[in-house]
Amino acid sequence: MTDGRRERFEELVPAILEPLRRFLARRTDAATADDVLADTLLVCWRRIDEVPDEALPWAYGVARLCLANAERSGRRQRRVAARIATVDPPATASGDPDPAVDAVREAIAALPDADAELLRFWAWEQLSVSDIAVVLDVTPNAVSIRLHRAREKLRDELRKIPGAAGHDQVTERRTP
Amino acid sequence: MTDDPDHPEHDEHDELDQPDELRDQVRAADPASSLAPADPTWVARLLEDTMADELTDESRADGTHHRSRLTWLVAAAAAVLMATGVTFALVQEDDAGPASAGDQPAPAATQTVTDLTVSGDAASAKCLVPASAPQVVTAQTLVFDGTVESISGNTVTLAPTRFYTGEETDLVTVQAPSEDMQFLLSAVTFREGERYLVAATDGRVTLCGFSDVYSDELAGIYEDAFSG
Image (cartoon, rainbow over all chains, first blue to last red; front, side, top):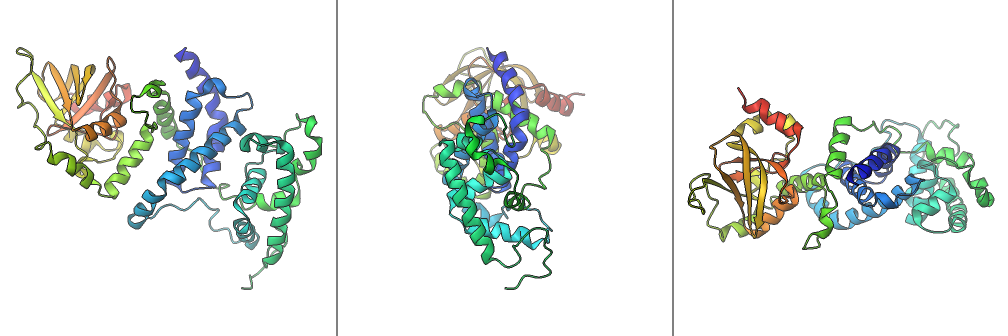
């Protein structure tokens, strides 16, 4: 039985490991990302019998909950640790001078959390509407409607930011 | 896991699933686009740690939320940073200090026993990976390979099969105040009948990966450090 579990787990991991690392790197600091990745894999290991064929959206759902747990319980500890050590910020495409990139990040940050998270799953994890529905445990229709709205809000935010127009458009400077 | 053409029942969502300019624009701001792939050694260790869980923790009597060993490494590192020696100092006040190796009378008349303690003392909680910290490996005064014979209260009794270094005895017990024991049990997860590599300095078990479930990798490190 244990061998069967190991086999299934070892088959599962290559399909989810790097996507989960990127998922976490987009949302938290490096130390928390490593920690939550370990938690997520542990849940996958324990619940290997429940992992669906389409494993990744399910695994994102697990990682999302593990991250929420870690953020809750680790908030105070991290605050203390941050006074002593510099906590790595989420990995950024550092050195990217493209103001359109900054503008998009700024616009997403200005959105309500739920909208921002939908857009991240849609554009960063590149999930389909039905996969996002699995991750968030809601109906595809609900995702579709919320995503439409979130996109509209993002467009509105982008319009407020100079230099955000299109990523083809080279903007020499950003006016404050 | 990109756009999935296998969901015809959600035709009405197709528009959202198609590539479009806004999606590309957001994607260009992906902070993980430059994330390097994980170090394979780190991944291997992570997976082994995960699979070492063996589901037994689900029956843990205290019902505490399981933390993987990786988590405990991080937690222990954080403990050092946060100087939580205070927490453990409270425990140690009641315990009249740790026993030093080998100077305790054996409980059974004929068997020799080494008594070890566990300390959450920040000074001993060096969270280094054994493979990359040879100076810590060689500083161990007792390293042995043994199987847990019994766990009772605050005492874990191990039957050593091999000593890499240190005075050889028939049994080794690990005794600790209960809270420290919790820390140890969480960090090393001693279980009856399982084989472990245990390292100690000055009568105190060294945590953070130096004492662990037996693995050829860790055994190899001790073999290299103490043979010949």
